[in-house]
Length: 125
Image 1 (tube, helix red, strand yellow):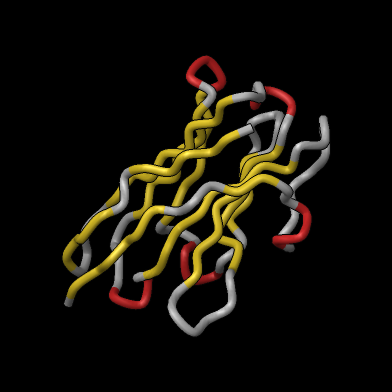
Image 2: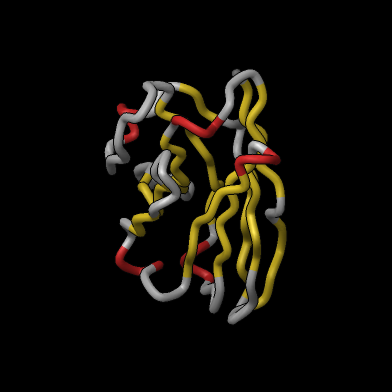
């Protein structure tokens, strides 16, 4: 199983980015997939999760109202759209899958057993 993130980059204050997580080796239809981020010197934190049934949960309070998460099962891809970006959103963004069929989402990184390598998001002021 492999996860590959894309869509990161440098964006100005207030800008938007759409990150994608493309999964191979596993059909995402039955699995929860989450987005995390980690800034230098900080703990990895959960941003959002898309449940196997398509429902979404935004965990990070600072992203509520600014981020959405969705999936395209045909393309085996999960997206996150992030708007009104701020310098404090600068971090490495990771997607991860909880490869237990029909298991729910959760905020702990320990629930997710396969991770991508990340995509860097930098927000300039």
